[in-house]
Image (cartoon, rainbow, N blue to C red):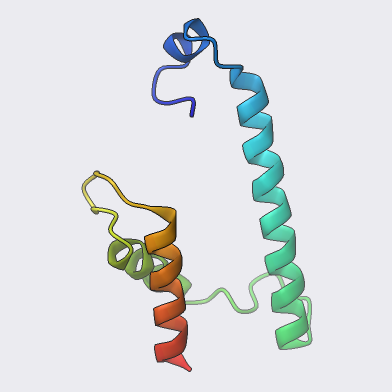
Length: 91
């Protein structure tokens, strides 16, 4: 919502600070849910448990979801469907 130019967004009437704080809050909430799920799944609270080798899967899900690797348009729904597809294939 803020875009690449904060000044232009502010001049357009967008409350930039509100959006930035909101994004940080949502990111923290999602990260905490992921931490609880990983801890429940592995049975331990190691800081790197369950995260080794997930970088390639994240890029694959984004590419399958329609996001171009050199920039472009993608959708959250497409990426979520790609994550579900990769999860089904890995199980």
